[in-house]
Length: 177
Image (cartoon, rainbow, N blue to C red; front, top):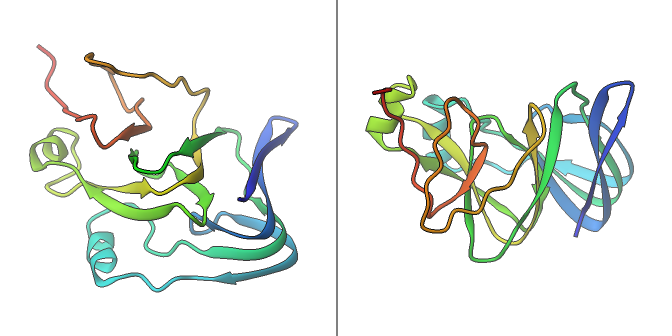
């Protein structure tokens, strides 16, 4: 399994991925540099992915790096959050939140309901990255992350503060009363 380290200096943060005969997927354009015996390829997207890319802000092409060595991703003044995805779980990420993942984590798309899309000012179609499998995922975030477990409860957020949720959590956007 790839090892993800968040490094920082002088206010900048970046992700270093250590590969040992393993692979990692990243967001398009995330590579800063790589060192070692690492090959890069870009899996050909499915027809569904091509169609979805016409209506979303999510990347169509996400490169895969495989081999042994080190991959450093672009730096930011924002932050990153490393999250573990367990087998049997399906996670839905906020738009443009995906940064990198283990090769064992499968990427797909999730479509929000038309009503939710409309109220969020996203038009009739709102597609987001969905994850399933087992491994680690790096999320690109604006600040610190708080993980909240909801058990027979609800969470109300005023703004785009929910960056990831499991399949069982339903998102609704409503007008203020």
